[in-house]
Image (cartoon, rainbow, N blue to C red):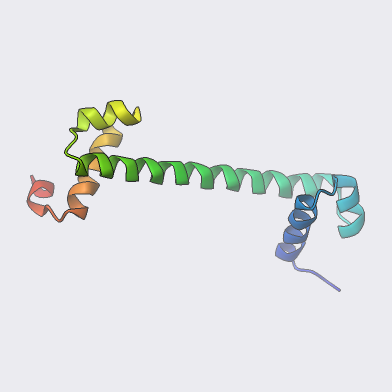
Length: 106
């Protein structure tokens, strides 16, 4: 049975998640250690990127909630430990969500 590159990568990840070590995976999938290491490293990087995006979204949601509770941008910056540019971006997004188009234009 011939597997596509994507299927082989998925198989490597499935075996790794089952607790198999790299040597066992290499024997089963018939791949080199370095190829398996590359797949595992790529997956780890994708997971880190996804985690960062989730945290960023979480910060946005927290900022929107604070703005909804009538907190000032300074309060939001202090509470969430954000820089001015990030707070300003979240504030503009909040205005859009609240359909405050006159503020956005100003």
